[in-house]
Image (spheres, rainbow, N blue to C red):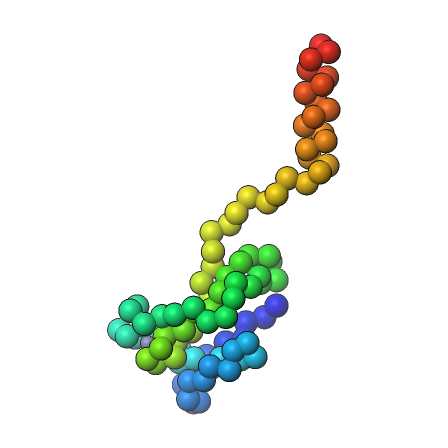
Length: 91
Ligand SMILES: [Zn+2]
């Protein structure tokens, strides 16, 4: 999934989430205190989770990536682990 954020200095900032967001190129002094989450957590094309954060004052928007969580163990891995444990007990 590609980003919905368009960075431009020619258009006025716009929040038309989830279709598109128009953001200025650079963050300013207002941004660090006024960034709020818009929308829900999404995944990019690599599978990383993120959500959009947007400054309530100037409209600067960025993707905020979440820390990577370990994937759930698949049933295949669990079965293999059980099997190898059984072999160790026999030996
Ligand atoms: Zn700002």
